[in-house]
Length: 116
Image 1 (cartoon, rainbow, N blue to C red):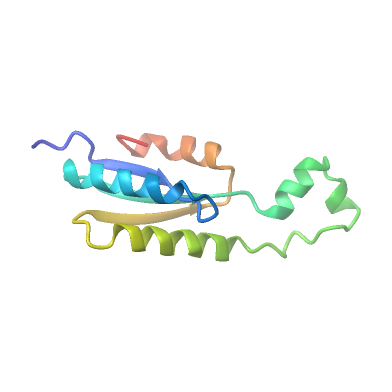
Image 2 (cartoon, rainbow, N blue to C red):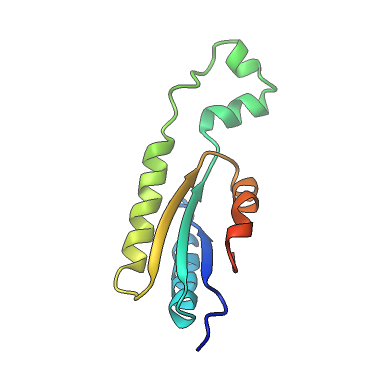
């Protein structure tokens, strides 16, 4: 079968129980069409969300420390889930992390995919 979907991007969020289903469906579509699967973890840091929600007052007032975020741990958990759920499925996979809102991040890389 000709590859209709050569590159599939799937959003991975270790904090979302539905993420496992998204990864599973995307992996099976990639296998069916002999495509590759790109797992993408995208998230704003908690401090960035706090700054945006407070219109900057949280940072200006010293309430939060912009360096204290733990995005790396969140992204690592997402990657571990992605690797676990795609293991044993005969597809090529790759991984991306983007420190941005998921909608903005996925929109910015959408041109590299045939299916998101």
